[in-house]
Length: 237
Picture 1 (cartoon, rainbow, N blue to C red):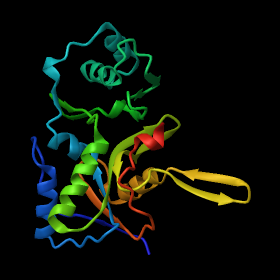
Picture 2 (picture 1 turned 60 degrees about the horizontal axis):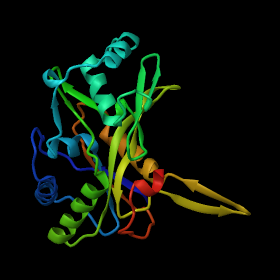
Picture 3 (picture 1 turned 90 degrees about the vertical axis):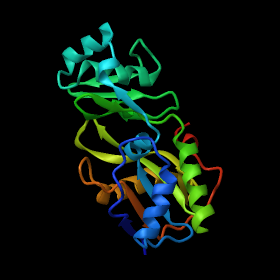
């Protein structure tokens, strides 16, 4: 049986910190039961804050491209659009996808995300996605094993939308311990599923969107073989 359970009362993270230590401390304090081969899904916003990836919007000078795109998408602060452009590492804007009120961007690692993973957290501050989510996922998994002697997979999730649908879901932007892809065979056809995104979306049922404050969710009961070489890069490239 597959079960999904949130780690409640996780402390609010507002500055750079040792996230592994906070997770382990909360697991112990709340007597949150984790077992080998459980999967912990963690929001990218929590990761970004713990890594100190804050951007002061006052420090951003929008380019002419950002100002033009702001005319197309007035709801987006031109400074935020500039950060989105910067995250794609392509000043020309060719790595962006624009449609009505939607803006998405291709990141250098091959992932495509709404707003290129950039999130505005208040009137003057934004946060950006870490460039090494796989490494961070590995570090958290290793730290949990060192302290609790339990080997869990980690999936880092990010909120993502689609041009053809209203609303948002959760997708995987980093992982460690579980393959991002699940293959099955039917007759002569091989079927491939992005199991990492399916797990991220299932965790999103409890995580919700902004304001719900449930940034860590455990998925128990998935049958998989722990793979220390698994990365999100293998699923997108």
